[in-house]
Image 1 (cartoon, one colour):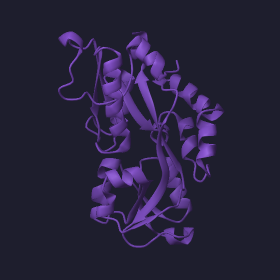
Image 2 (image 1 turned 180 degrees about the vertical axis):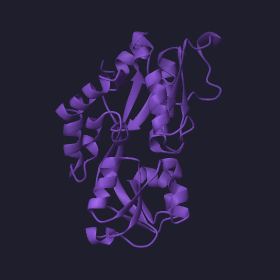
Image 3 (image 1 turned 30 degrees about the vertical axis):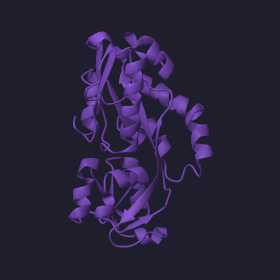
Image 4 (image 1 turned 45 degrees about the horizontal axis):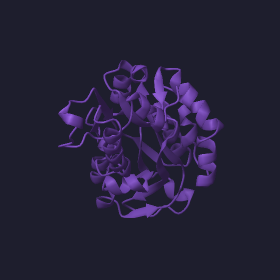
Length: 255
């Protein structure tokens, strides 16, 4: 099943955002549907900012029938924990980077291949076309419902506390924190770096304590996670594109 905002609202089933404090429902009635949404992004990340706006619109357009509570910043556990929860039905909604989902659905790592996309024109042609459809079909095979479009996290950049990264030679023996994603671990090993694979929740401390000298992420996350407090340089490498797949458990589609 392909989800869009239109058919979501029509069935009163899905969306994604934080239930806002003090939100009043039509005629004081409690919501008919209470959903939880989890992700690993900081509260101030642009994705979560937009999710809050979405929940307000969805509450209004459904007459208060749908209440969605956002659990950002790994409040429900790491990506692996949330992946298990959404598959079991304990969590109704989540956003996962494709590379993280690749531990369960290998084909979702396609979008994270190094230097695969040189511009956003090529990114959207792929994600809104055959490549995106191929990945969505693979997600459906494990009984998850992928949304028709993806969150754009932006191209990934490298930060460092020791030096700017100008060429691949600058990565030689460079201790760089990367997500728990085999594809990116291997990519940085191939470039001569010494990748340190850690969940996002542990990244800041790893940089602060020099377990890693640098890390790589989209600019929006670098800012919202405050990596600039423990990093001196930011190199615009555009070495990979980043997307998160909004997904839901199949139970939602039956409403």
